[in-house]
Image 1 (tube, rainbow, N blue to C red):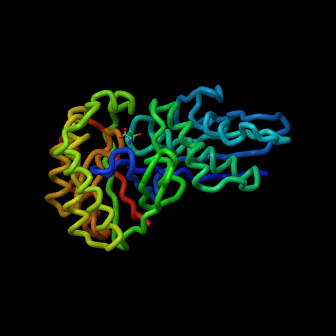
Image 2: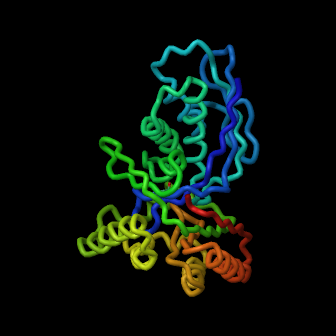
Length: 298
Ligand code: HSE
């Protein structure tokens, strides 16, 4: 028996929702293949597109897969092939795609004993290996699709948010690597009260805007006074790209996950294409190679 899984890229944080908000990109992702074997346990048999460890306990997908089978009496083993398309340290959920793909594929081979919510918890174990912290803002949208909110972590409480009909995301991925652990290390351990008020006001506004398809409210809410001021220095030409995106009609723009990717949300495909082109033109002026992706958010 063989299961093939598409493991989508994701944008975490969405400016005002650090560690709690995320969305799933439809057409960018890895592929993983799962096969039953007679050798018990998890094996990683093939990896393409990235230089990752085959040792299961050192591999994000391996750790996540182990979390699913732990303490379960399974009379077969599982061989995993990983075909990476999402670059590590790109800010669009490379490790989460591996972790979420692993738990999804293993669950399918087991006959789907676990709910999506349980799978998110298993996937967080894999994510923690890569980033040093168990956050779910990438793995949740990767497994559930669309926009998600992690309402709480103890216990895990994830809410899937209905996407506005016309929402598109543009992502510019500069080919430099920013490690999530490093991007977390630049953050202040505490934030002033006035910034917290601004941030949670915006997060509430974003959620309300998404549910009511109020694009102006989404636009007003796509701000980040807590994380972006510290992380923007890690991303060459960040501010120029962000400004160009907004000047060309994006609802808002910011750092995708821990960076270096820069995202913009747009109302409608036409505006998204204009924004993508403007971001492309702007970044072509730098000497840094990059990719641009455009995706509808469903
Ligand atoms: N919320 C995480 C961060 C996403 O920004 O550090 C990256 O894994």
